[in-house]
Image (cartoon, rainbow, N blue to C red; front, top):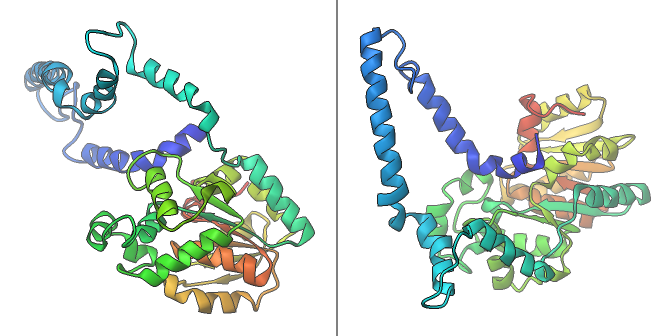
Amino acid sequence: MSMARITRVGVKKKGVIRRKRLFRRGGRVGKRGLSGKSPAFNNGYNLGFDKGHAEGYRHGRYDGEAGSGWKDGVEGMIDRLIPGFEVLPEVSAEEVLAAGVEAMRGRFLHLLTPEELGGRILQALDSRSPFSVVRLGDGELLTLAQGSVLSIQQVKEQGPFLSYAGVDVPDYDARDRLVESIRLATAVGIPKLRVRNYQPLAFDVFRAHGIDYNRLLLTDSLINYYLYQSGFLKRITEGRRVLVIGNLAEKLGEVLRGGGMHVVGTISPVNGVADVPRVLEESASYEFDLAFVAAGIAAVILSQRIATDLGRVAVDFGHLANSMIKGEAPFK
């Protein structure tokens, strides 16, 4: 899977699932007609399909263009920026954006690559120095936004999954503990996607809580997958004692042991952010070099505190655990 594919997978996943469900219902649907129907029926079906497709395309391309998000968004902004009685012929919006992005190169903020971060993790392991990798997704960012960037009602509406991720809104204590963990973590993953509740919200909450992101060691929030893809997951675990933490810890531990990893123990379950003190105390009872933590929003706090309090290396493992257990990402 390419890095671009990994970046887009979260956005596309729901659409893929819906398409799969659609094709499971009522036979094959599309230009080929319906299975089990007569040739005459399918001929009429195909004619109607072609006509409807053409009409829909015309409506979307012309009739609906003025009200589309694209027109109101990028194209509309370009129109507003071009002076009156001037046009920019035969230049696409993509070309304008590319030129504008290139002009902003001096303001780019570098995110650590898998090679850069993986090298730092290896160095910390070799020197037995504390090191934590935490990642901020929409769940963590919405938790941080409570009462600062967004109202509690907005957070509840936009994050109905937060309870599953370990935070029952409103939970200002969880918010404040996340802020502290971000400040103390060694490396912080932020979303690269410039869509609502991802990268823009990250910088909004940094500003709201007085976090100077220029002083943070930043990487991509999908760095767990990138470390796996680049082979660093195997490199950082060779010869190391690994502790696995999270609700799927036992299953993940089996997978990792099957790949030859020295898993010294598993801690499960992790009952949300409120369970962090107990899990941290149990972690202290193990002799380990590296911890993989897949525990929802609590993983940020746990990873940081395993490094800060116990002096170990900890990585926020996230949904890579699910992918490995399902066999989608076999240990390599």
